[in-house]
Length: 424
RNA sequence: GGAGAGAUGUCCGAGUGGUCGAAGGAGACGGACUCGAAAUCCGUUGUACUGUUUUUACGGUACCGAGGGUUCGAAUCCCUCUCCCUCCGCCA
Image (cartoon, rainbow, N blue to C red; front, side, top):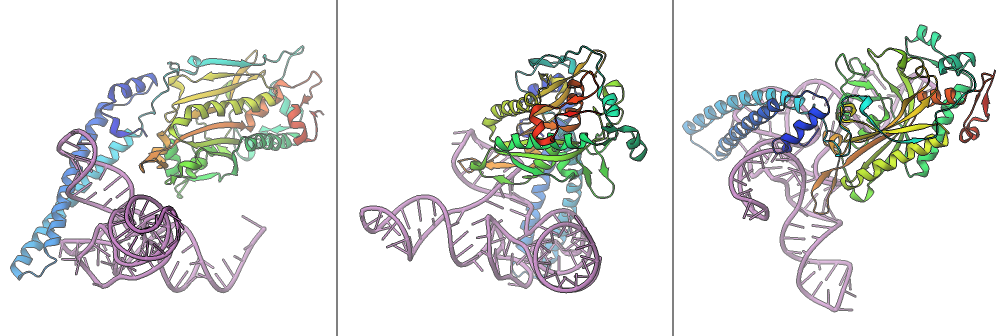
């Protein structure tokens, strides 16, 4: 959530930002509700003041008549307060739910655009893999090498689930360990997080657990959800606390399963492992001072690049355009790996994403630090993918396949794997 | 899962329905004493929201695990929930 105190003074900027992000939010209505809320709040507080004064007068001994009079007055006040409070409550609910939909401010360098096609490519590394044979996609490779079983998973669990088998199991574990080792060398505290989180944490991070378009599985009757990313549980880690300024930045890495409903996303770009209901991911998460977040955001991108360069996978980096930013993100960089089996001739496909969410999530989660003058301030929160295992597997299988149908393994993974090629 | 005990400020801890934002300690900060320090003494020491004010400041409301309720008035009484502790049972 943005700072609602700034709603009026920054109205023009906020309105422009909403337009750039291709969103439709009735700012005027929100401001009207804010005003109405403020009036009701003042009226309510005034009545409470009267109630407190009335009660205070009855502390001393009174004659019976006066006492009866004061009690009657108190009763009337009580009812008036109840009425006001009910009205205030109602306004507050609509006001807040609308205000929460206002997106974060946007970094001035972010390209303005509506769709992912408007994202700005800012870097490429390596060249798209060239083959002197016709390359297979990872679905074919997964089948021919007996590494991935979609059909059985569909029968057992439903569409977009999969069994990893044989070397693919070890590849998943190797990727996780490889990423965790790199993060540890960068000073991250390693964690394996819960795969379930409370709805209030989800909402604080900026996910909407409800509704048709929600990407979240909720667990009926518990107020909890399956997490779509460890960003949720890592952000929830310090929810509601005031952190020591000296301990910032706090850098955490979390390994978790990620569950996504992916309702209504079909088509060729969602075939195979690329878009699935469950996958494993190592996520980076940072709590820092407001002045540090831009630099740390770049550092997270560099770590992501280190990981993919170590895997020898060609990629490009994009600066995500305004229309493609999530509401909490102030700026977002994606790494798109070259995937030879994607599209007709191969295409880049997203494998990581790192966002600077500034104080947007911290405000909802109420995560602060204390300034030197004793005032508390919201921290800045950042997140980034170290490795989304399923997509990394897509990139490895497709880029390193050989003419004989085998797949070589990236050198950096060999110590973790114990083999350097998958062959049948 | 069953039985019992509990949750109060940074921490410990008191609190009879009105005099309680909350005793008393400890800690921290400021000051006195000291060459300096320790000890001692004096003082200050929560948060959020909100109103007036240029800031300073002053005022109001709320907050004693969370949410409801009773009452003119709740830290205090009642209900629900969460968490923690002890004992029993079960279990990877």
